[in-house]
Length: 366
Image (cartoon, rainbow, N blue to C red; front, top):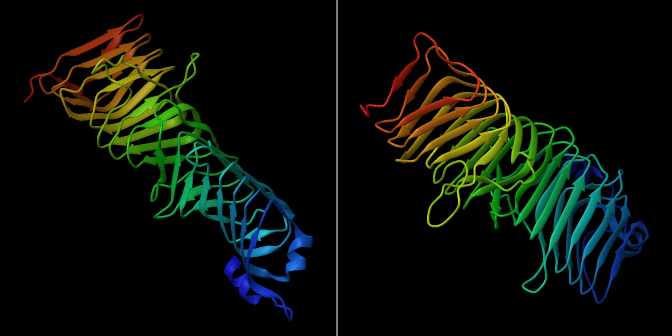
């Protein structure tokens, strides 16, 4: 039974309101007692504006829609017995909300901060979360016990973003989780116990110690995929990694005075089709099932701390392909290396270099 259907069937007592829109000067605490005083019906739509802070105190009610606008901060909790169909919050200061209900939560929009004040958003829910509007703040933390997704117009915009799921994917193969990161020096962190399908709509997709227990599928519309982890940590740790970029590569190439900065990965398998140069360091053994670089003269530079296996094609559009490993190098049957006229360099520190029958290498550009 959907929340909308439950709301439609919920009885409304005489005098109770199905819609309540109130404005308050100062701070406001919303709890079951306050809702009862307002005469609001179970399953109603609630809109509240307050010039100060708004605190939600363990609300037990089912609401079709909850919309809050605060001149200060919004904090509090929704009980396990509550169910909010659609949530929208605007706050000049921080937003920190814990939803203990396992009912699916639709986020119509969250906005924290102003031109003069830094905003922070922290939303934790015990059910699935779907973002259909914009979630925007300097720092955003989203946590779900189940899955997270964005609708057609759903977007998370932040300088620093942390994503956590206890047992669920972020995004899907059919609809990636849409991001608009405002600062490539910060990026996406967190722990996703499932698969992650992340799509950056404008610039670079920056990673900072992000852990994905399943497959990570990353894509950008116009930028590169870069990393900002330090202290020997991987920018991304994932079971397998699939990458697609239309306007950039992997890692930061050295150009226009910028120092090259490789993307540090801990993953068993990589498949990538990118438009720019590839600079990656892997923290263990890596299997490359596909690595296609379409940018003219863009370089491929892969360094593996363990073995490196090519089970598929590795190609550039005239740029050099450099493959370095501390372990063994194996080019499997049917795999192909093609530099389209660029140089090819394969080096192993202490392992053998092997090419199976049926594997090919071309540097001719034909």
